[in-house]
Figure 1 (cartoon, rainbow, N blue to C red):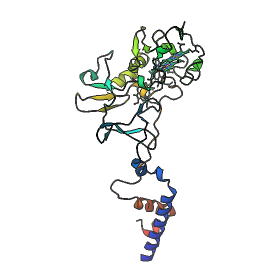
Figure 2 (cartoon, protein in one colour):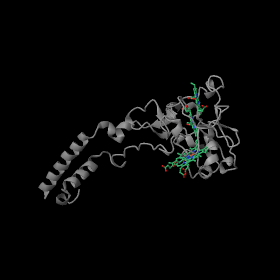
Figure 3 (cartoon, rainbow, N blue to C red):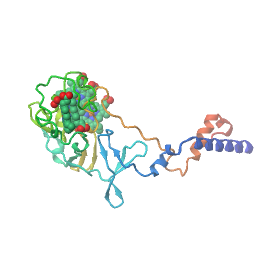
Length: 272
Ligand code: HEC
Ligand code: HEC
Ligand code: HEC
Ligand code: HEC
């Protein structure tokens, strides 16, 4: 019995070593957590929710980013870079607490601002809302005649203000700031908007005590308005699972265990 046990232990040790060797070092959770954070990372929608890592106070980073996916894993200061959300058309719960958001304009590639070109002369004001092919902005909307939002029922100028391109537009022709996209989306998606307002849709971080300050994620931090038909939402690549429970000092036990089961040797050794 003693010999069998020794053989099994040797077998599982060898198998454990083999497994460890086969894993790429950078693929283990512990290894990449140890590496330095990437210089540029994002919070939700890749390319449109970037954060530059900085210190909120000595030794405390504003965010901790994944070396694996570039996604933010943890916020050192949930309010870093935010501003007050501003008013909402409907009285809501948030009016009784402090609500902040991250401004959108800094994330937009063409916000130079837009009126740097769309001033009526460099680029003339559009004559009608009728969809037409565009030569510009194909990096944002590849085919303006096949916009992937609203199944052909809507077009650019149902959202973008034709006269002041630095703004979006409401149903009455009033201006909506890019930093408050919820007001734009809410005009057509009333139900989701009220879910969002009530905290059922979207995301918030911050203080969860009554009346506590919270940061709200706005619609375009998760949804690409030009893409929702093909990709309703941009999923975040998941982090790899932790290799072994925190209570264990190393992974040898888990690796051996898996190998024993895999080789069917468990029966001979009576488990571990
Ligand atoms: C470098 C110049 C430039 C900048 C900056 C620019 N645009 Fe444009 N945009 C154009 C041109 C040129 C067209 C017309 C393209 C065509 O007719 O083929 C256009 C067309 C459009 C259209 C289609 C409707 C229309 O007016 O013809 C939308 C919507 C639009 N732009 C949105 C924006 C937004 C929003 C911004 C800022 C975030 C922006 N643009 C910034 C050059 C620019
Ligand atoms: C459903 C509403 C909606 C429609 C329809 C729409 N847009 Fe937009 N667009 C937005 C919003 C909202 C933003 C700001 C996105 C953000 O906050 O990330 C935006 C941003 C942009 C930008 C700036 C992107 C950047 O990175 O600078 C351009 C250019 C643009 N839209 C062009 C167009 C064109 C051209 C069309 C039509 C072919 C169009 N949009 C249709 C809502 C819309
Ligand atoms: C002018 C009206 C209008 C505005 C403004 C608008 N949408 Fe939409 N949206 C539509 C329509 C129409 C559909 C298609 C509904 C359907 O087919 O049932 C749609 C569909 C969607 C879908 C589901 C995609 C699908 O086809 O399954 C998402 C997600 C979405 N919109 C997000 C947004 C976001 C985020 C905003 C604000 C940036 C926004 N919408 C602004 C009209 C609008
Ligand atoms: C934290 C991320 C996040 C935010 C913020 C967010 N959404 Fe969504 N939304 C999602 C996810 C995830 C889905 C589900 C996507 C799927 O089904 O593939 C979704 C689905 C939707 C849909 C389609 C499904 C339905 O119920 O009709 C619409 C429309 C929509 N969102 C609009 C909005 C609007 C409008 C806002 C802002 C007021 C918003 N979303 C804010 C993540 C978000």
